[in-house]
Length: 346
Image (cartoon, rainbow, N blue to C red; front, side, top):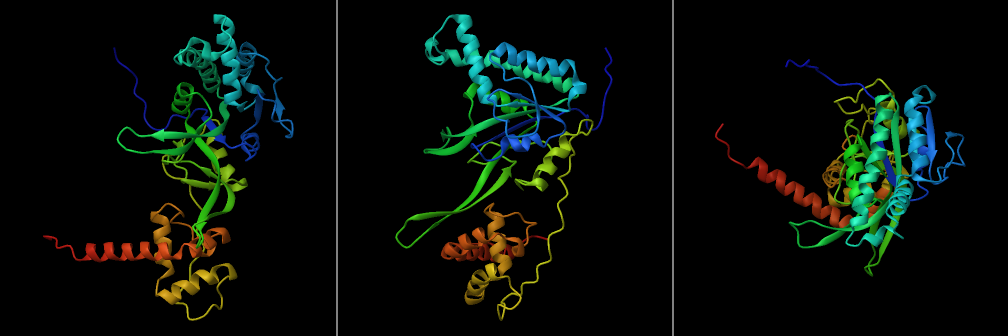
């Protein structure tokens, strides 16, 4: 049998999973996707001017509401299920009623969650009919902190994950084209008594996997976006039905030119928030660009972001941790020197 070959990106609607802590703006972000209709499972969109289905009282009604969108795709461009974890609770009720069990734990040995995961898969299949009809799907979920231990490591550590049972979470993350973690950017400094102090709290969108959180995207987004109109617009462009995800990264605005001398002779012309940092670089003979390079290597800043654009809470964090910063700069200088001294045969 001969098969027809295709080439290049395949335009279709997109699957997006947004998760994060309560109150950070998940529902608000979803409301800014193209022409949305909410399946408001947990009745949390009342503060927004959006179109919504009635709050589904049961799993069967939830499934029926999602099917109705697939059958009438002209009604919207995006279906938003808010939230996936509230939908999971309806799923538990369904399988418990069907099996005449009092709770999802009644099966024992976690078997109830496996049964529920198979039922939850049916929701994703219904949402795929929306995708086939040209309607984007956005799932909203809460986040939770879980202890995680790799089989090849001795210790365990905490990380943010989607607030779903592990079977449903794995299935849903695999299903999605993008998993975006909405987070508060926080910096922790330690005082002389060894006490930690957290500063910052800026809302951001994390788009790539990290040991501390789940995230991914197939769209070439930067690792970190601001959770503002500009950042949301970069996400929304990929949910324009008919536009396939681009293979190249999203174009960023050109960074402002940096005009910091190696050792500034005075604070004249330097923004007030940067003056403590530049005073330290001048005192210790460090090029500000070396500080930036260290922050890029450690994943604290993007390479394209100029030092002049660093936020005041982050600058304060760098200043408060200056001893460690100078150590990292020394390590980077040593590595660069060793690289220059390597003898090559050509």
